[in-house]
Amino acid sequence: MKLLRVGPVGAERPALLDELGTLRDLSELVPDIDGALLADETALTRIREAAASGGLPALDPAGLRTGAPLAGIGKVVCIGLNYHDHARETGAALPAEPIVFMKAPDTVVGPDDTVLVPRGSEKTDWEVELAVVIGRTARYLETDEQALAAVAGYTIAHDVSEREFQIERGGQWDKGKNCETFNPLGPWLVTSEEVPDPQALGVRLWVNGELKQDGTTAEQIFPVAEVVRYLSHFMTLYPGDVINTGTPAGVAMGHADPKPYLRAGDVVELEIDGLGRQRQELKDA
Image 1 (cartoon, rainbow, N blue to C red):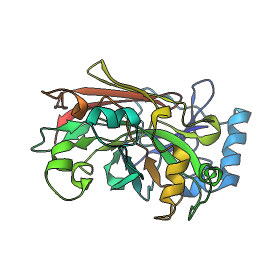
Image 2: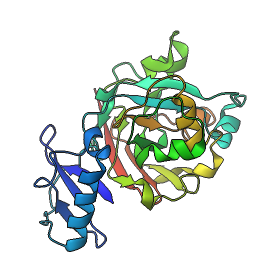
Image 3: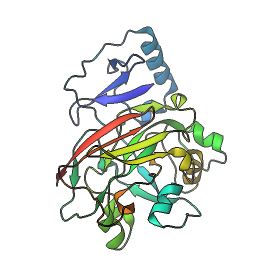
């Protein structure tokens, strides 16, 4: 299934994109798309049956904003430097274990919402990422099979980053990762049965129409299953948690000088095979 949330900020309604591309209203079946729903197999079955019957009311998408596909996110856990080609372009050694940092849930916005360039920023960068959405509580997982069984689905994250704040200002990476609007998410939460192999997805990003990132999740140093299993030994993963799994080569930081960092007025578009497409215009904060 392709689950999403549509409507004004703070007043989104749950919806489904059916196999014919028609937007369907789920608000009579479930209150929202959130961790509680993803952990409730009965409710998910009810949605599948309603979609198959063709009885869900259609929504007119014209002028309808698409919000982040998940409400009530508990935490956003991120994996840094997780693609072989990205490590090569930045001259970094391959990590022996996943590099883990966090983004606050309030960085999450809709897939087509405005991204704000922070005040004083000279090095705002783009990063298209496969995002994993957790569907069941996970602690101390032992196998890849257990890890993938904990995954409810997948979506697209734009891990916007301010490189000076992240790298040159001391302390944790968090300062360059948690600026307002720095995690557009969506458009859809695609349930895991529609993504049989998360390591076989094309990942692309354009800036002002120019292709900048053109990679594949096959290049991940730590695959999805290993990331989920690994994290479950350091923190409990709950339904509705999100994991950003890293970005392929092609970020601004990896370019020769002068590096083409983002500015107000730039337009970024990104997509992952089967998971939809995002588009953001940048403005000054």
